[in-house]
Amino acid sequence: MQLTRYTDFGLRTLMYLALHPGRESLFRISEITDVFDLSANHISKVVHHLGKLGYLKTVRGKSGGFKLAMPASEINVGDVVRALENSLSPIDCSKPYCLFTPACKLKGVLAEAVNAYLAVLDGYTLEMIVTNNKELKSLLPDLSISILQ
Image 1 (cartoon, rainbow, N blue to C red):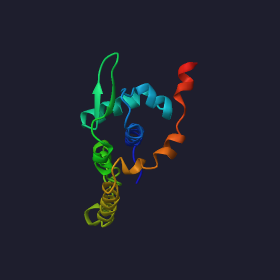
Image 2: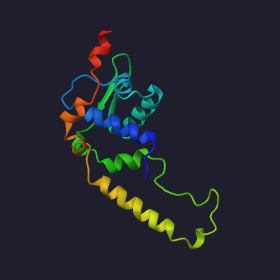
Image 3: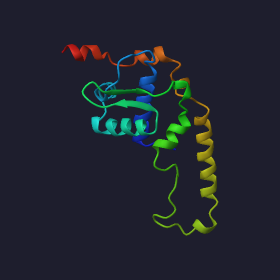
Image 4: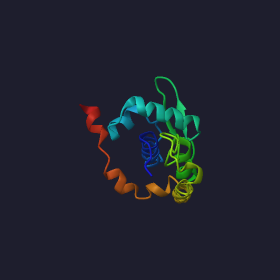
């Protein structure tokens, strides 16, 4: 099962924020796009959605930005994936219509596989997936260099 880019970007954004738990200043879209080399349009949509879902606190305006709305220990990865993915169905039997659909057992097997996949994700919080924070931070670009140029 492969997650959409939208969910991938949402998880990356949450992980990045979770790596900076004591930060006082708000995060900005440009910081996320610079770090991960992503489209500002995409990240804006993801951040807005995560705000509406309650995972982020967003502040509008010139000095606005966003931050985690709750501790990373309270953000369940499975819940985030369910909230961001349009569909978790691994197969669409209707396009084109499959003649096996009325008696097919494969769709039941695939549904069981998706449930197992989500059950694994449900066992993790955002905090748990960034426990190697020093290693993760060492992989991030030094944004202070780009600010000076």
